[in-house]
Image (cartoon, rainbow, N blue to C red; front, side, top):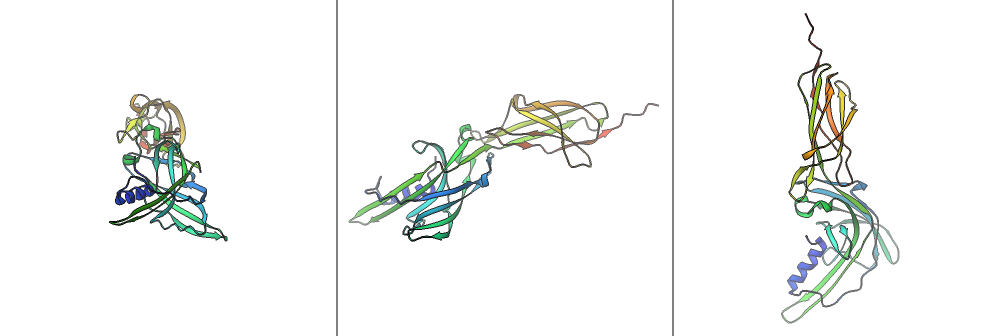
Length: 281
């Protein structure tokens, strides 16, 4: 598991200082993280290779005398799975947040903040358990050290405020479709096949998704709307196969509504020409 960007900065400073733990601890300031929104309220859908950059916005209220310089003192929002006592996994920004002051009092400063959490499936998602509901937490960290040949001292403080909001992480899904024969004869049988797969973060590939409800849809050529034809269930390896009677030229596609752990998907429509029956002489 990677370190938090903020935690990494602290541990790096500790390593440079040549010590394993801080000698003293500073008092934790009172920070309030509110109105936290992750990925604009939408599920975070992740495939097998592409990094998904997740926007996070929130309001931070801090003491007026606290300076967050992103050098020795940091504040940000992270995502975690599990509990703060025992983290199963975590996702955090690699670049510090951008904050703009919106109001002040004699004792506090309120800021509107935004950050981006990069989700690289190859590096940060380990297994199917990561496809679940994550929690957001506000993180504060401070580290200061004095190091010389004759003197060493350090001061650090880390605090995390959990359960600020939730965000769903889902596996990306893919659907294929192929209708045959081509061209088809009106009134004869058309076989429509395809495959439903979803991201497998353990192998870095897309694996068949068996036992899932998928809908076959058809769009008549020259129109824009698809209509449901029938529902089927994916078989071994995510295989899809069904038959229909040829009636019009148009496009067939499969549609998957998604599950709690896996995102919805639509196949690109497959065009099939339907010709009238041959005229008997």
